[in-house]
Image (cartoon, rainbow, N blue to C red):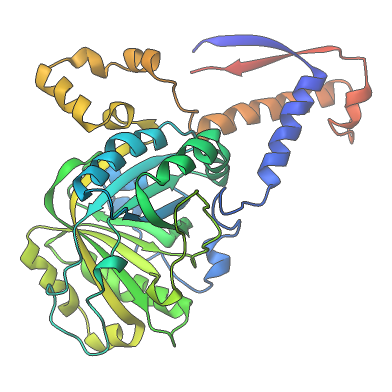
Length: 405
């Protein structure tokens, strides 16, 4: 392990610490992420211990479940652009832009087919169909390790300028909702495919849910956690299940130009589930896995969108090959057998590397804190803050060691 020694002044050291304190205490706006409050405070009484079993998780589950925040961005493509062009633009142009932004832990695109209403038997009081214009064409799933990462992402110039400006060429409407903590988790993943790219290997579904008007958010979400998710994840033909319990939508949160952000309350979703089954006919088993009266009491609509393609542009804090180059280029490289094009050294030379994961940043911050505390004791200034010591001239220069990987 190499050690690099840097010399910084007291003023520089204090500035680093003050900057950290200021950023850490900022309340998140919608652009910078979800409301700065825990899921436990928002939904008291919801019990997750019986559903999230860390001892039986696959590797990909463990990676995904490290995320503290999940953003779900529903997108409705422009009607004046062919659908195939929009899907390609999202994957190879807009997606590659997003994969350049620091703070992202995982970024996956789910490309959707029109909703299917004939998968299940009809259940009184539950809607399975919706007008074509209300159906999103895709979902962007963004995972973040910490609040600071959400803030880094949301305030980055790439977002505030380039992403905002680019959205008008892709969508006519989008809407982003957040899930904090265990309000989103991967419960089952037999496939254990860390970076799915392209056409799906098994039938994949986005099942979007609306709650009954007379049911509270907490009751609806408890039903999802206690009844629906355990029942579905327990089916042998279900290969992957990830649930998302959504915060209320705020249409003022994301203001990209020439893009609509309105979404009528009666059309919004309160939860959605990403599901993969062995065969399409296995989806019929979903609504027979528990008593219908529970569904009728808590759920007003079940809209099921087949996923025809999935793309992972960021995984575990690093862009994937597609995140770097786009899908067509990676296919050409694969066909040519050009393994050198996948070398990290080459990619680092071609593209600016994203910021390090939050754990590394926190380690460096802790190093500064420890060193500051050491000098505080050394010069017997107990009770003095770093700010109070700013005026002192007795330590003009302090050596600080930062450990590098």
